Length: 445
Image (cartoon, rainbow, N blue to C red; front, top):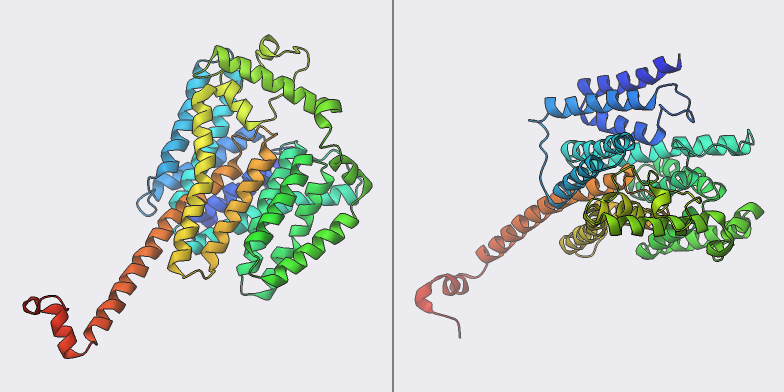
């Protein structure tokens, strides 16, 4: 029954994509990647690997079928992501153990395919808005499952679709800006209230997951949104009041966990284990500077390189995970993508600001949401191995789309401006107009 339900979800998504529009396959793919119907935590009963191969094979088929209708444009992100995938494949070929590398190849393949599908099918702002809803709704499903288990079933072992509470909290933090901006820019009151209401279970999931990185990320993302939207004074007042009331009523377990951030490196076993793993990653990079130990092979030779061999931990850092597994080549490509996501989004926002004369419009609000989500990824992911997190590559795809959209906006803007100048030129008085256009008059003194 559970297996049938999982495949029913897959079949429904594909049928809607074929009958109505192929971009709906992207929405289903993004949602299933967040909810993970193949994992035991949601309990749809499908095996993860089989589900992955089936769904992404179908998505790739849709891309090939509708390629003439939806064209992929090439930019700085496309090539960097492709080279990152090739770096993963190459590092696996040089790895001491090939099995774990296959899992990473599958992860990066899904990331690569999702990026290309978003860039192929998201053709305008309305499509991107639908994508924001798909991402947000999927995260809300996981958050509601956590809140239901926490407060109704008194459950303590639910840690999201991947079984990692830190990753679950990180996803919630990255989703908050999307829901917030969807509510801010929608014209329908019930949709606005709907979007803002679902921020509550996201915030509760972050707090009660007891993820210290998630708590810091939620505060940073909220502060950045209020700072960027200071022109809406009512919003700043409401945000500050909500923050003060929330801080005053935090449960003891949350405040106790948050207060351990400053001394975690001295007396927290997890934090000390991370320091040991980071030292192992540096030693791996010294022996294998180009390709590292091989993607997925961080723990294979961990004892050989760690200062404390028996204190085995994953890297708990995207930076050190890539350094140890893929060497300086993979690390450089990933750092390039992280930096360019912020720079290109800021560049697009500045161009939009110039076109609209410093006025705020929906694309600019959504670019701020992308940058706020980027802050959540960088801050929460500083102590998590999330270099292959699909959500981050969704941000890259959205930013890539906005480079195309802003170029189209600028083209229309300059055409309209040229038309206005031509119209003004035609309405000048005849003697002045003739003096400006007739070369026999020379330059006006």
